[in-house]
Amino acid sequence: MSCRSALLISCLFFLSFFQAVTALPASELTNAERFKRGLGPKVPSRRFNATATGQPLSKRSVGPSKLYLQASPASAPPKRSLDRREATPHNTESFVYYDDSNGVFALTINPGLAVSFKVQGSGSNQVILTPIDGTTFANECFIYSGSQTPAMEIDAEGGPSTCGFTPGTDYDQTVAESQNDQIQAPIWNVPENVPGPASINFHNHDGTTTNPSWFVYDTYEPDRFDQLGAALKASHFGANGAVTELTLTWVNQLPG
Image (cartoon, rainbow, N blue to C red):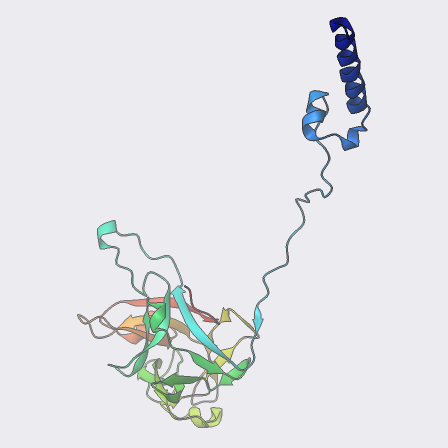
């Protein structure tokens, strides 16, 4: 075969190959082939919908379960210089734990120290149980200052009651009994879903109910002691140290 014949056969082969490729429908071309022809990229089989949303994160319905109490300052703490910005429950997220040296519930920034609370379900005026060192106690509020007859009211004689929290054994105390008791157990409100707000009903001796705010307060300075408390106002504690209003939330798991 002459060189001329071989060259002719090669040209015919490449021409037929080119025609076969160019004969492909545009829908079957790769993006590289489309770009060579001046075409745009292939349309994706599933278009992105910018308005579509994913499945919302559902909250967990509360049945008999183990929960924790997470706290955060109700308002932004004042700015301080970096060298003095010590993390405390007064300015950052914290958790309720049992301070065995003082026998009360307090706040810590270490989630590893948080205590768990056993709830039977959602509802109000519940007795919440807390296991401590192998024994289950009721989480009770005790009158800390102000009127020692339960009266968390502005015009209470002796000043409005304030309260702290301690483990106790009044598992079967009724609301009526608590109205004349310096220690109250059936006070806790648990929402239908968690995470959700934590609150209490303080039972006044006149049959009314007060829903106080949460606070962390220091009463034993210079030995810092971040105690959990509830009151109408921060000033009602009469504490020598810092008092900061908090938001308290029921959660079903701890960070980390």
